[in-house]
Length: 288
Image (cartoon, helix red, strand yellow):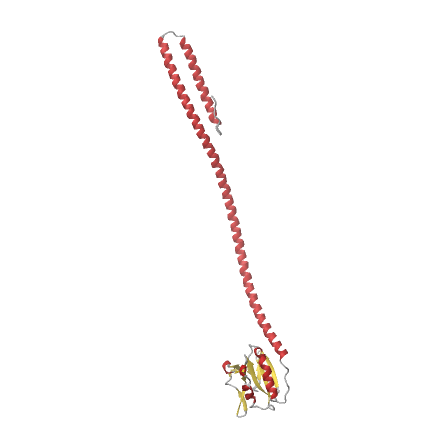
């Protein structure tokens, strides 16, 4: 009998060979018994032999059926073994996938760590950049002040000497003019109408009142009227000029010179204030 070949069925083939040999031996014995039974003359022996032959035939038929069942089970077992191989391959893939996932998680953790470090570095750099920007702005303001001051020194003419020893002061700031003094009964006094005067130690601080200043954009008539009350022989006109009002100095200087006054010029920074000098001499001095 031709046997079918199956994968992973070596043990089943041995079982099948054993069964076939057993059944072959049974058949051989049955044939020998049948041949021996022919030599017995009595009918009882013939009947007994016929019965035995039928039994042997039934057993043989059952053996063939069992053999077919075994072959069918072997085929099913081969399919199951093939499935086991697939399951094993899938199990190996799962193990590899878990290993890959573990590597990916480790790499993701490393990336997150580097991102946090980069964010921390970015925050530090932003803080340092903010500090540098503030420092640059401060230096820019200082440089602007120094530049304006130096520019004013370059643009402003030198003081014109005069014989008078007293100063008649004007503050020129924000495009406006503030007379520091007025004459009361022929004596100069601080102009409280134009300045907020505060005691400051042994001197007094003078802060121009913004809304009281004479707007120079509307002309210099008011300035000329304030000069009309003093004499060039008694006073030198002194301008306390702030950096934002350089364009207004030239016409004021020209008016003072045309009226015969000597003039002096003091350049001021925008954040500087004025005070009267210690000792009550009445001359204005620059605050640093």
